[in-house]
Amino acid sequence: MALGIGDDGALINPSADTQLVMASDTLVESVHFPADASGEQIASRALCVNLSDMAAMGATPKWFTLALTMPKHLANNQWLKSFSAGLADVAKEFDIALVGGDTTLGPLAVSITMLGEVPVGQALQRNGALVGDAIYVTGTLADGAAALNMLKANANKVTEDSERLLARFYRPQPQIEAGIALRNIASACIDISDGLVADLGHICLASGVKANLVAQWLPIHRQLREMSEADYLNWALTGGDEYQLCFTLSANNKIIVDQWIAEGKLMATMIGQITQSCDSGELVTVDQQPVEDSIGGFDHFSN
Amino acid sequence: MALGIGDDGALINPSADTQLVMASDTLVESVHFPADASGEQIASRALCVNLSDMAAMGATPKWFTLALTMPKHLANNQWLKSFSAGLADVAKEFDIALVGGDTTLGPLAVSITMLGEVPVGQALQRNGALVGDAIYVTGTLADGAAALNMLKANANKVTEDSERLLARFYRPQPQIEAGIALRNIASACIDISDGLVADLGHICLASGVKANLVAQWLPIHRQLREMSEADYLNWALTGGDEYQLCFTLSANNKIIVDQWIAEGKLMATMIGQITQSCDSGELVTVDQQPVEDSIGGFDHFSN
Image (tube, rainbow over all chains, first blue to last red; front, side):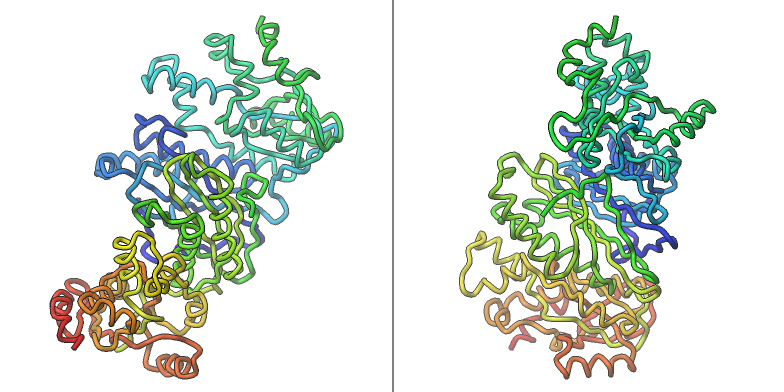
């Protein structure tokens, strides 16, 4: 996979009647991935994190540029081959094209800018949630924080238990298909990169509403309930790096989405509701309580 | 100037009947700028370098994202204010919009991805130079290398002599207007970031031709001829970071461009000619000699 395209810039032909969605994310060694991560792990994580932004906008990802900064000791064929393999693997799965970029010597960092397309007026945004809307989340919660916690403790050692979490960390599953399906359906949408409460809070702030979550409805993988009873509700509510979509639905569109879920077309769970208009203060509660109380009291939920 | 746009990605409306040009460049501390450069200097240089890629494609720059990685000791209001001022200043001059990006903690690096527009089929590319075409360059040569040389020696001290060169380094003048004027006129175009010989070589390789430069025609600022007789031809031929455009013209279009130059509408100089078809070997000569001989023999030209 070439890193350049042989001219000063890439020429791109946007489709008719579409808007473009542009998003950037940078991953820095020891900040966003451990120093012992492989080239392949770093590449796939960087690309998936960027793809998740496209999913959150309901966009079809199309093109990306890569700015790779790497120290001299990594600038060898073996590392670059591993990195390229990770990049190519994800690019192929999501049918996106590397159209340019550059490599520079320096401390290891990967910056990707992605360009996607969405039919005019159908982009998913943060500011459309209305009072009465149901709140949903795709997949399961708490995996991102659990993986990070495990990586800190285990230093990238793979055990049977950890395999799923490691995959979740280095190869999050951008919810592109869900995002596309939710065009014209979701009233608001965001990807959970900062944590459920924080990101739902972004929807609330942009929409001028308050949200209440129901702790017992939060979808958490069985493995997590078993391995870290003491942490999982905290992780589910505040853990970052989930790369699931949190979205809101009107009563009518809830019927449509519930049907998709029942038919196995979409993996998503209702986790709460938009309760009232609001333009300040605490925007997200759990079981009608402040989030801190819920986290402090998680023991009650886990028994 | 906000670094985010308040959603997971920026929504962009491309103009009708245009193609998009997408390009990325990363600047790393101590590699692409000295450690004592100000936030304003770093920002303006980063943005100008990226704008130059748009100029080389004949594109009208429109939108950009910024990935700023910065160490903790710079993450203060003063530095960010300086950086933002540099960014805003250049963005305003070229009427471009920051549409997203992120800031992360880490070693200082600035990665910008720019998106521009060009009418369908009118992008300037590298592969259209034909035998007999005249070779032109905008502005003057050798300033980039002279500035770099001065920075290494002077450590960012401003003297009367150095002011023009410092400005050239931190605030190169992207040849956007020239690039736009040359749509449908230039047979090939590139910006000189790697050095005139290297970048003209890229045109030759892509076009399957050889080029010959005439040393005495190279436009070099009077100041440089005076201050560094021993270096200027070398700098003009091989120095990077010029951010001028090198382009080729058919005999008919040469008449048009010469008229623009005579009328003061374009500052550019003919510096040589495309001489023959070729697909390997030394693609660029100076006065019909290998470049090395010309550089070794520069004393003859300067007297």
